[in-house]
Length: 311
Picture: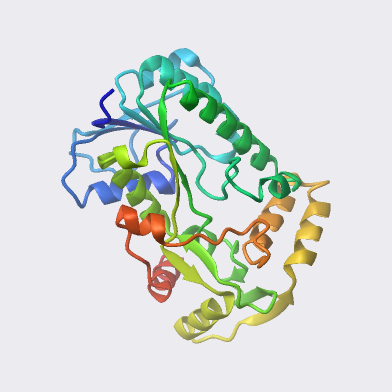
């Protein structure tokens, strides 16, 4: 079977990852025709309006007929599914196989919930619903790959720095100039930006053969909370109010909170786990896979400047 990719469908493609993918394609010569799915009536403004290689289609993820119609003729399908749609991935994958799609990139971006993760058992004890959903999706995907029905490329990347910083996920309240510093603030966290992840998707599809049926652990940016605090105070000429916290205590609080509010409790657990130096949830990826793919490392201060400018 040829691994050449020309036709790509982005399922949930109006996300920030879809934007990063499209914006990177705009900087290079490429052979792709890209179909972007959404429930919006037209393509978002960041898609070139005069480029016939970008198309739009409205897909009902609950309809196999609708999925087959969109997936027919596609060489690769990229699942950029929001959390509420993650449980639809097995049905989407099976529709992709039925439609003849050759390569499937699952919505695995973030923490590695596959059986390859040595911390999986610990991960699944946490009351974060999408951990189990993503793990079940991985089991289904691996079964279909082992059956020879499709190839996959899994990408895991810890947290999206430029997404997590402005919404407070990294422990910083940019508006009120407050910071929750975990365990002293010197734990090194490996991360990536949404634009670099979009670039990574494009790069693996340009030359997919070396990456087929592999799991890529990608990081292009590393930071500590203390480093980030110094950068933020310098760039805003402000002093942040500090709250010292422990990852252990905050994760325990999140577990208790999850009993009444699973979404918020899960958010607290994952946010604190980034700084858990025991590596129970927070991955410590190397640069190896990113360097193989050709992803350049990001400068923390430069990315922080972009985030502040956009705020």
